[in-house]
Length: 106
Image (cartoon, rainbow, N blue to C red; front, side, top):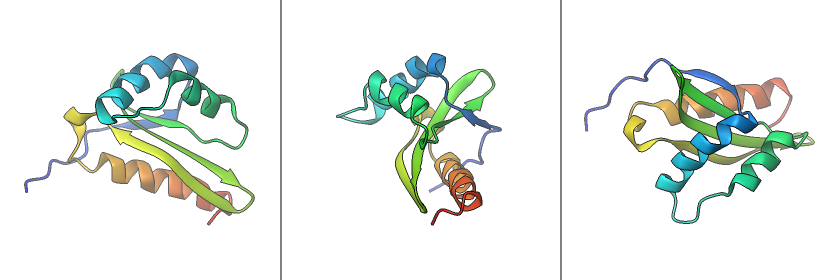
């Protein structure tokens, strides 16, 4: 299989205005997608760490995780089908694991 290299992305906090784009990716990726309410809950939950990957002004992936005491939990990670196979999900995971490690989570 030929792999593409990761497109230049910026990983940023997920904001309420990001939810429609995130939902569009979620819906084309899963048969039982998360709802907008679930993503909004992650945005406002104190222990949650929802992030989006942006390429230019477009969201191309996202990851949601949380931390409970010293445990980190990856809840959801998804990349838009047009951007898969470039290592973007791995980059999102590395980024989140780094955040969790900095917060002394395992």
